[in-house]
Structures are given as structure tokens and as C-alpha cells.
Image (cartoon, rainbow, N blue to C red):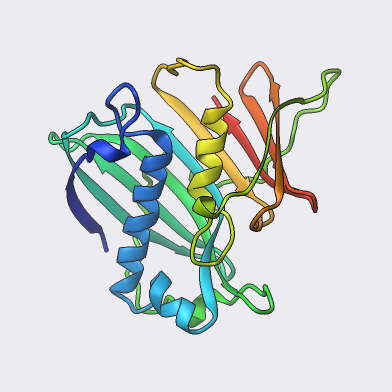
Amino acid sequence: MFYTQQLITPNYLCDQYDNLSPWSAVRLFQEIACLHSQTHSIGFSELIKQGRAWVICRAYYRFDRLPHEAEPITLRTWSRGTDGLFAFRDSQILDQQGNAIVASTTYWAIMELATRHVMRMHDFMDSFAFYDGLATDRPKLDRLRLPKGDSAPEQVAQFHVLPSMLDHTNHVNNAEYVKWIFDTLPHGTNIPTPYHLCLEYQQETQPAELVTIHRLPSPDATYYRISNPRSTAVLATLS
């Protein structure tokens, strides 16, 4: 049901404040999801041999406190089931007292890389033991929309995709978008916890493509639109 792993927070995953960076937390959640899936022979390495891959579609992260460098932590993840196309996964980073200090709710799909078709989940996840407990306060992740108003989103970054930003699908890794969002903040910005990050992944971004990031503050959150030359790749809110 639960898959867990103990870890000493690595220095190389920490930021200038000696805390685990938010995008590194996302990478750790990605890794623990992969390890859990591997126990059922549907991890990233098994699927890629079949011309398939896990892709993340929606994600919600709650950061109550980021662990310090060298702090012992426990990663915990579980599957909450499927609805046919999406697999629902919750994950947590626990401190030594068992408190959940970072948590996520994510929606995943399995895609045929050649056709870009999404597979039916019941063909892959029959062996999983599902658990309906929630890691966050978001049992359901709705689609994101930029708010309508008088203000237009401001362009805050533009750059080309570098090879280091890609993963084994030869597209930008999901955690890289999180890093880009935080890189648009003014130097020295330290967002006080708790805060929340919600993302909807709409399209892959490919090698060498030009990426443009727009930001739109609103009363409830700051919205981000990350685009490539073909379309919007990711919508996100930071609050």
C-alpha cells in the first residue's frame, strides 16, 4: 500500500538557504513514484522498453516546511486508484517526528511515445493496492484557467531549452518547469511557508524550443503560463 524510503537531505539538492529546493522536492516525488511503480514492473525503465512512458498531467504541491541540509527525512507514496485514464498518486516528505512537511497530489497517465496516445490504466495497475487517504487538501485537481481581467500577463522570461533540461522521453522534465517558475522570482526572494503550487501540464516542450514565461498576479494567487512555439505547455499557480 505505502512505499517508503529514508533519506538524508543531500546538500546538492539544497538552495542558498540550505533547504531542499522546491524543484528538488518535486524530483524526489518523481523518483519515489518510479521506485513504487518498479515494484509492480511498470516503472519508467520497464515502460520505456515498450515504447511507453509515465507522463504527469496535473500536480498540486503543499510546502509547509522544506527540510534542512543533512536532515533525516522519509519519503512516502501511495496510489489512490484510477479513473480509466489517470492514475492518482499522493506523496509526502515526513520529518523525524512523522510530520508531513511537504505533500503532493498528482495525476499521471501512460502514453505510447510513437502515437502519443494515452493507455487505459486498468491494463497496467490491477496489481496495485490502492489507499484512499489524502496527502493534501485537494482530493480532486481541476483544470487551471488564467483569470479574466483588465491586466495582461507580463512576460518575465524567454530562453531556449537546453539538453540538461530533458529526460528519457527527450522532452522537458516536469520538475524543470517548477525550477523555471522559481527562477523568475527576484534574486533573494524567500517565499514564507506554507505555500502551494498547482500545475497543469498541457503539452510537452521539445529540445531547443523557445520557451516564454508570462506571469499574472491576482488576489488569490500568482498565475504562470509557460509556452513553446506550438502552444501553452504548462499553466501554474503559486499561492
